[in-house]
Length: 528
Image 1: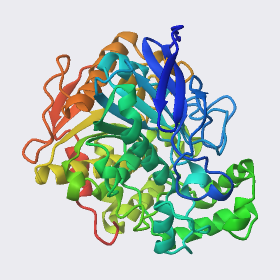
Image 2: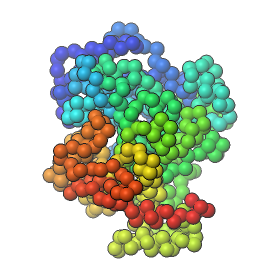
Image 3: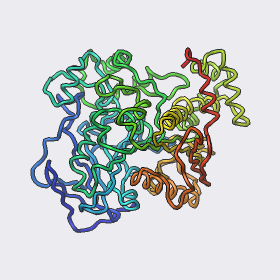
Image 4: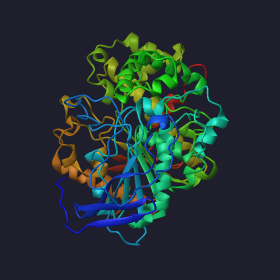
């Protein structure tokens, strides 16, 4: 969106120092605001620490660097790129959009980007908070946090006492918590609690939203005893809740493999490498961890019982987090994002896919399950069955299980499925992972670089974007996504599994994903 600027200086006084922002698109914007100390030098692979502050007035009119990550010149054939230079390991900044610098105490929307734990940035134009601030009278915060090796390496030789001391701001030089990315996000939520009222926001009405890895982050934060007190609503867009979250001992093999890729013996030696070498070594870990028929995730969250106490899929089911309002959903063909354009998978055989199904369902059911999937797609090829399987086991079915469990306990949860297919690549992407994002943000002009949205009918796009964008605004404001331009959206309940189907015609459907729910209910304990 083209920037429109006001000559009037915008200055905010924070405990850490003064900030100078500017007006863009009719809202006040502050970019590149530090929310934690730079995680460099001795603070690399340490929990996020408070920022020491600054003197004078800090310019906040430009985004801060993104977390170091792999970068493909010319972009990729789906997103057109999901992280752009500049990169730097001094990356812990956030951005704020607000309708006005006053004491109106508006609801706050905190957006956590995804990217498979290896890419992405809260500084990307596609995640600009301008539309939400202007259209919804919300204060919007996006953030950069450590991804890839800087955020997701875990050193299991540290004790829980060391990690707890580090999280509490102790001075143990060798303490290394397991999930640095989570400590970053927690620090950003603390910053919101302590500062957002100066931007016209209400720290007591915070919604945390995220997509993909950012949605898994949102669920993980809900399970953290401190973080769950810092927000009251959660939006989970395509959370990969089907991922296995390893213990430190299980994750150690990956860490050791990464050390070998980097050509070092231990974490102390690794700390001395410049970040470009760390990112180069991540490519080796990709190759090491790749498995046929599985979404590639070289780096993962770790269940360390200090920063992450349980699988994120369980975090919103009991305790104080059970009272958090939840909106959760998925796209109909999530896995097409990573597999539909891969020539190797295009040539997959029935036998290969049946063998892959056996890893989930057991050999005794694999052929029958293949046929059950094939019947839902007339003319289905083996790769189509494989993509439906991956979509179900990584995204759709775990989301359904979360909705089922919350509904059974009487906790509020709204569910949706995004069905509008992308015309790009002769329709092979269908309703792929990430496709809902431009509709949620209602900012198609910021997606001009992305093949994902090429060829979409503007009239259909505008109508669906209006429905989704306003539903997200309503949920952030009230905890209920209903609005005047949307058919009535009932919460998901055991007796009426209402799922909003977002498509060229948007309608609520009872048990929309019932086939997947019932099919995966047959998984054997041995295969699960």
